[in-house]
Length: 437
Image 1 (cartoon, one colour):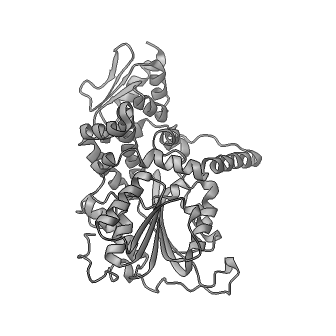
Image 2: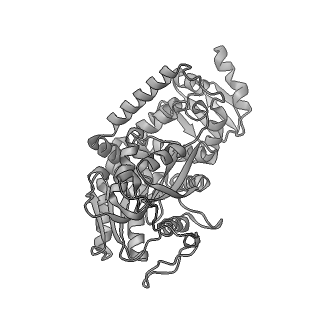
Image 3: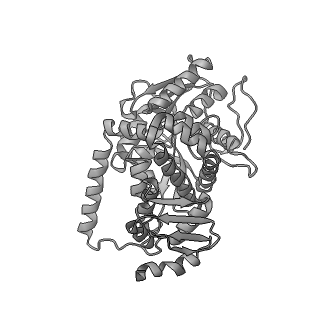
């Protein structure tokens, strides 16, 4: 046995979970009664595992070159313990930094044309509506829930999140409300039904567009809700909106187009109006601690073109476009809990998930399912350990709008107190009782 293979044994035996590793040829290392078993059929896969290149190991699992046996929670405990703990060396010369930044910007620009964005969105969101319905809540809200009450179920927490967004934006009957990246319509329909707004949503997903269109018609909301299949860059600016939300969408915008994204929002928003951007943000954790090929794995199998920025850079782009941040909240622990809930639901319905995927993905269904199992549990671990964050940022377009040549001033709809965050005062008379929070 190679010396580097023998050196794996003590590492495997000291993990916080009972792990067994099956080597090519059948030799086993680690626990005799494992919670988790990794079966390698190729030495190259085992070498990636020994080097802590977990993105490569995950790809091997998806492609069937390695096999994973065990529940996802202990699997992720083992993965976290095996990741490298030292930061990768960065180029010392400022010129090298500038070159890397320029290259990253050019790649980001190329990755986020209208055509490529549409393909990338459909790659993920159009995989199968029936598959997503198995592990999302009944409203199919595919973003971080809000567990304001420690006893809340995922379904209750998603309703609470929708209502929290409506309260943060202080939605009022008759207002024009835009949802950029409306998903399966949860927020769009909630805002129309409970807050009486004229709601307009957009998406690049054909499946989502068809689903929301059906809901609008079946629920008799065609007079107050509209969904369009379109790119945010093509939205008409001639009639500004009162309030705008973008939930789980700006991760697809691209770092190089972030200024363009917020500038477009400014042009879509009336003076004094409010916008809420809800999205995943990067954290200062050393890249090698969390990303030994994991971003490449996510980009290849789950979110092609996805790019994350730290919160301070997001705020810089927002301010540069002429918006004023008035409220910010980090929901990182809420997203960890949301993702684990999704993962647990998927794990409990694997046979149904495989069948749902087979109806659309055919022979690729097992591969897609393996990718999503690793993605959901891996992201849950990343948020749980603080490697990623989730920020809700509320901003206003000040009436003075100095950045766009108007008279000085900074008035907006945002109040002097924060009482509106805790009391749902904007419900219409026909709305049901407040959701659990």
